[in-house]
Amino acid sequence: MSTQESYPIDVEAIREDFPVLDRKVGGDVTTPGEGDDDTEPLVYLDNAATSQTPKQVVDAIVDYYYGYNANVHRGIHQLSQEASVAYEEAHDRVAAFINAAGREEIVFTKNTTESMNLVAYAWGLEELEPGDTVVTTQMEHHASLVTWQQICKRTGAELRFIEVDEDGRLDMDHAAELIDDSTRMVSLVHVSNTLGTINPVAEITDMAHEVGAYSFIDGAQAVPTRPVDVQAIDADFYAFSGHKMLGPTGIGVLYGKQEILESMQPYLYGGDMIRKVTYEESTWEDLPWKFEAGTPLIAQGIALHAAIDYLEEIGMDNVQAHEELLAEYAYDKLSEHDDVEIYGPPGDDRGGLVAFNIDGVHAHDLSSILNDYAVAIRAGDHCTQPLHDTLGAAASARASFYIYNTREEVDALVEAVDGARDLFA
Image (tube, rainbow, N blue to C red; front, side):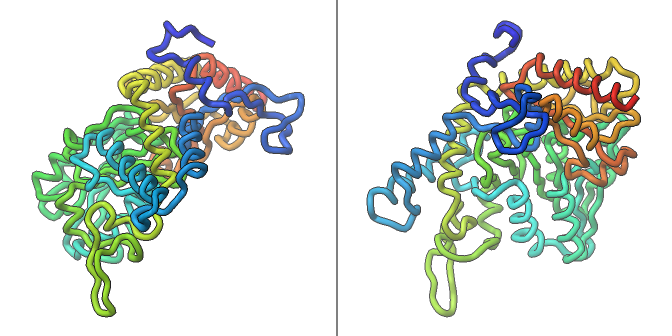
């Protein structure tokens, strides 16, 4: 393990909070948590898909279930009151984390995908019509691309795509051509989960506002890894997921400007989101509960609060510096070989991931071989099939980094890639 002085954060101390990093994997694993004598210490480099979870976050979930498990907003008894306060404070914590104006602008969903669908259905189906355009990009995750594609099909609106240049960046001249007076929504990813590109979301939001359109930012790869200020961006909507930022699965966040959320109809109907119900009519609860029908994500929200506390103790500037250091190191190491093609901008100008291919080795085969070396990466199209088609690649291998990863683990990745190259030589 490298010394602390070589990193902007105390990686060794952080790794102590993640018991899963003590696992050994690879070889012929037949039982979860167990393996044969060929296993090696886990090198987990699939953080863009899901990060690992520290003990402090698991403890927050356990504390809820063991200490004050109850439904929120529906009971007078003490446990319900304690759960309600903790759940509402989780909204406050998220609002402060991304600099929203208040909890009214923070809706808890299952994930980024549901956040996008909420806006697409609650706003898009009501507002879009033939002659309108929705502008997105060629590097979008399917959660965004497919959702707006289907909404445009239903409403008769046109879906336009900002092109990606040869360096993996958005063509801003093309963006200026596409975003015009017919545009009602501009939806784009903040950090590409395939290219690592960090998009100029504030600039594109300004372009949207100049023509009277809204902006929706997919922050699934941004909020976990860097400071995000939704007011500075001036985003109308911004979405992200808890499981990519040390939190549990099953919770996402939709930020929306209060005046816009108030103008929208609910996406789901049922208990807890209503104010008054008769046999003929219903009225809706105040924000954000208007969009959180039924028993909400109580334990998950409380755990997300704990995850944010953990990240903020490290400092988001430090989180960003650490993952970008590792991404640049991996980019440089992999670039030493002529048979490696890396997608996206240079290593000092990207988020904390590197997607690549090796000549003559399919990404799925590479991932399988790397697993024998106990190196966990992602292989496939990363839910960006059209982008891979544009790149001329059926799939790619992706290594993605987070606060507990080290240079030595990048070296292990490169060594495993060398082993795969030798195997297919």
